[in-house]
Image (cartoon, rainbow, N blue to C red):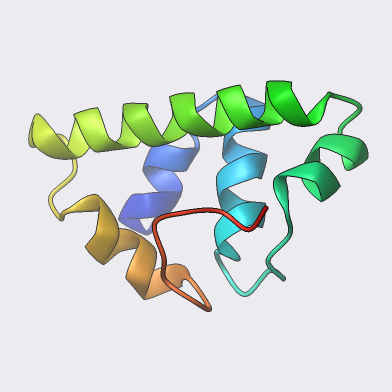
Amino acid sequence: LDEIEQWLDRLPRLERLLLIGVYGLFGMPQKSLAEIAKANGVSREKARVHHRKALLKMRRWANEGVLSSPLETLFAKHCKNARTSPRQ
């Protein structure tokens, strides 16, 4: 498995879906937090909080050396439009 897939699999379902959707990972269309929240039956605020938690976990893993590449490098390999902030 690709490294980012392995680490995304360690995240709770909502956090994983948020990262995949917001950043358009693996060829998926990019979506706003509001769109992902609605599709998963949660508030936009809850989606925002969980998106932030997921990014913090991934960043911590990168800083601890658990991820072999910087987070931005991993996302850049899989994002249609590599960026560090979500669409609003």
